[in-house]
Length: 118
Image 1 (cartoon, one colour):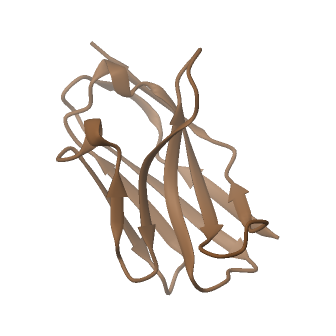
Image 2: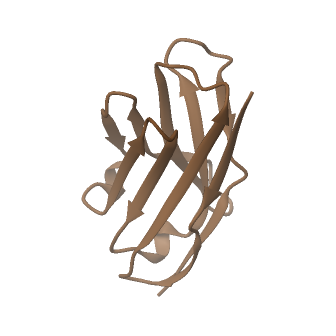
């Protein structure tokens, strides 16, 4: 089992920044991918950004250049720096950890609300 605890959400004005953090504990396997997903009301959950243990990143097209994902492998933490926030970024953001090869290794945090006012 893996536990994921998120922090850093909140209410912010458009154009401002927020930093989300997620700490993982429990059975942390190597070859994992940590990421941030989001789900807005009435919409499907979507991948915002992911990062492998080696630092390879992937981003949703509409956040490229605004969001940056980083991780600290020693501390099992992942962060999402969100700049130039837009109202369309309003959603619940979920931290996720998956194994690259084990389908059953897939855990979620409880989510943190990000609200961007225009």
